[in-house]
Length: 277
Length: 249
Image (cartoon, one colour):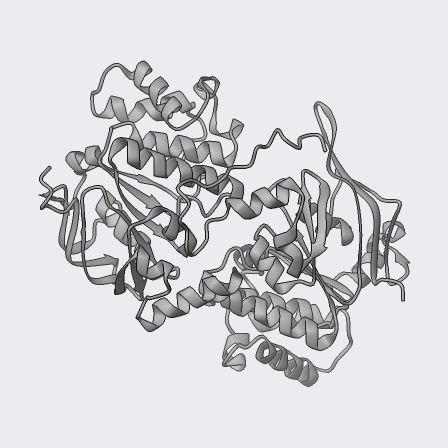
């Protein structure tokens, strides 16, 4: 079976006064109905990769690829109107910070409804039922009350669950989650990821989880791509992360303090070592 | 400073923002040279305690003493001299239109300390920044370099105490490692006392001697880092926090 998403030699570049700078330098990967993690530090190109898939990179940014197809559709040749029927409905994206991603002047319920009726024609009662069921699915206790609240009236963790509800209500086949929990408390992070994980598994969706947190990604994904300065330096099964061989991956793993930390000094990445690769 | 006296002592500390009381009856004694962590979820009041000690949250009752001297509610020059704060976001905590040199010289000018050029040079060296950064602006520096500047700024007055508010949570793991190493080295070299706010328990394990777990403005448990390392925290909420962290490792 052909993979749901195929990416071959994806390049993203931006013009600067010193010429075009490539932030994604020809990466290739496939995603099926599985959970793929993309890990890297800031500037590694991981978020740009996620955005490129949805054609969210505006001019003067330039996206090229030998092939970028989703379910047989060539994404690069789609126009804006055609993309709108893919975005949200078939591939959707959860962003980092609910504070900046939710519309402050619409109630939670209205925003989720908007996400739904943009892609499906439904009666008002049915829309309401779907919203409440979705809020329930993201484990919001009192969905009726929360649907009537404005984003500033909910906590960060709840805001992020609202975002997830919004993104999943049109029942997309692929969910891209870009640092979905980095704005949240540790105690809430696991909760939110469990919800994503549960829904993705139950609905048989594909997931691309983009994060800087190696441990988190290895826990919630099947396969991991490690990115550094625009290239994929390592690809491995999540369970095999401890056997990672690339010095960058090894460096990242070693640089993290552990719960029982007895090292006097943390090893620091030697950035010159693989510059240019 | 006598060894018997706490470097930071908080007694029955209540802190409010307007009508809302956010910290309730906190008592803490932090010894000279100790590195102490406040952990807990956002809104638990941990940063507010640092802000009150630094003089940024003036609406408090109870007692705050730094190096044996009770703190006043207003601007307290003695406290500023002995006790400085490093903030979470290195992008927000440096003046965008001041060079690194101006940022580092300002505390010296305020406190009437001379020999500024040499002190700035020495401090850049101490925090591991090349001299070529001296006349640059913050936007020309990376996040890790900016956090080094923020730490340098806090150390310009040669304080005894650093208040660290999530000093590495805005940084990448590899940069976090560099800053944690720097903080550990500076503490050793200059005999500093740290009071650090964080939600990252592994960071506590690396850098601290003791920790207090906070929830809803109250301290629920004070423990040694050894207890943390061996998973021997006792309060329910502490165990919850530990589980949330261990789960991701």
